[in-house]
Image (tube, rainbow, N blue to C red; front, side, top):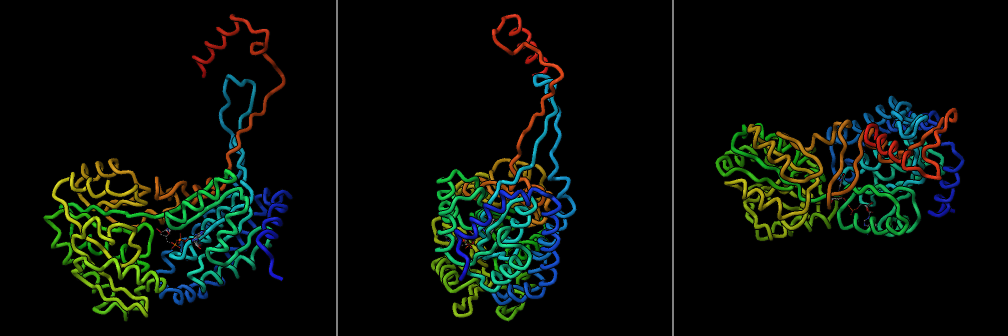
Length: 461
Ligand code: NAD
């Protein structure tokens, strides 16, 4: 008989209370086993991603597998240091004392993953949740069935079910999982589902990280080298078939260089994927029919200036450029999440404001420019999760940087030590000395003592 969600959660609750995961060496042993298992399944993972949406081994390595191994290496190398109680300077007001921050796991963690980087976005939070000493239930995406199966195989092989389990399924399973009481929920996915998760978490006041999406702009001024810019744009926009949460959703290009940039973008698309990208083994497919149809609909009534080939049966949409779509069009009303690039133009910085402030705070913002003042102004003027100057996406790959959204693009962050911190409660502990006990704070209170206390606050507070 299959183990039910309640049975798994109850086993994980009991296991967490057994204190086993508080032992850093115990966690390390599992992280090492996880690495060995993932390395042994490398080819199976590439095969699954290819089958799920024609993702090439090259893209699978640079955007998923390689990042996972690097996260595991970082955790294995640094875990003892990260998990140690951190000693902080004590305060004269608590004299005599030794003050610490204990790194405490939250307990039972639920991770819900999306389909677009189905291996990376499931395993990366799991690594840090385990590193921090939690138990994990992972629900991978139902849309990438092959990758989800491999994920379940890996987790089942490495972990006892009371420490980590993968539960496959769709909305019904996710709903059942969200109805339970967790100690932490880590969700990656769309804004509407993020709201459902937040609401479910609120019932038990469970802390959440929400890694969501939105319409991420890319501003390009007239100081750029249009050929280099075009090459970087085509790489970042069409990687993963445009199905990347932090890709440039649309461009805002200075009118002076717009034509030159478009010409170079067209050339680069052909150089990357050939005249007919459906034949390219490097160009991924849209995840399913439903999303292909959704994307095809957004092309109705807009001015397609390149690409626009659609083959719904093969879940294929060619790299497509759209000129000056209306901000009220279907294409510009929601996150695109596909290989369609709208190109808007600007003359003044007021034009840029009007476009960006038309939307909620995005997950990413990109600026291509050689003008330092323009770059500085745009980095600070707009609120967004994170960004890059003169390239796309690459802030995701440095695990020294926190990754996450702001406003409706998400809350909380992870990657590297930031991920460990996400799954850790910082528990302050003061160890008070007993060798002296000044009477000053005790009743009956005296104004003389109050004056001394006020002076202490002023000098040492
Ligand atoms: P999604 O929100 O549809 O699904 C994500 C997960 O939630 C899946 O596991 C799914 O089964 C589950 N789910 C779906 N509907 C649900 C419901 N009603 N109740 C409970 N759970 C439900 O997202 P997706 O289509 O898998 O992924 C695409 C979205 O994710 C895009 O908006 C993208 O921007 C965002 N995303 C964000 C990041 C990030 O790091 N910020 C990364 C990747 C994707």
